[in-house]
Length: 326
Image (cartoon, rainbow, N blue to C red; front, top):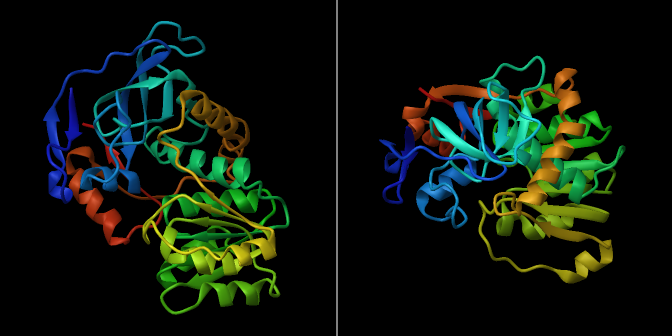
């Protein structure tokens, strides 16, 4: 088969479409013929040499895919050859075929085409696990999403609104904020021209956000704590603004607040399977009912993965950038 390889870390040109050995499904795995994959920030970091895949896993980028099952490994039940699926991956999505643990498979939701389904697994699992399973966002609470127009952001807005929360977002242009508003965001903050702490306090009568989903890390840590409500939960899932910052523990204590930090890729198989099962139970009915929808910015051939990475790094997209396998 062919896959996008990374012979040497570097810029988008480091991504090379090359012939590689076919994957073989092991115990509890299925083989999926990939129809489409999606680009995630983690793929960019891997290409740059900052986020290597866990030992023993696929060396190719791609944390999600959609396609058809072509073979079942030993011990797999509940799935059949020919089933159309989408999947959460540890890597290997930028390829024509990938071996996937059966616990990380999801059926393609009714009403969603197979290509578009590739936009769902990573964002749905990331948002549901962090905002609901870890931070326990409840109806009537306020969620602040940094990067509201990203793939993660567009899913977070919709899921939070679906459970009855109020949603504030930051984004870098009026056009992106308008797209967030279309998805249901209540409070729109342009981080280039406005202070999100000040705007959030205005919008909440000084209370702040009960949950903050943060992709910036160090750069926003102090202001995120300022923006938290009493008993608020800050969930850090990205480090685009650096890895080290001072934390005012006094402010955290005064608010009885919590700072949580998670990744999805390196979690044990059992934890991923539990997250995928929760997404199938709670998110898939919302997708099939039309309450929540995947947001796709554009679709490109997988052989043009370098172009897709440039789009992601430019920040010009809203929602997901998909890659079509040849």
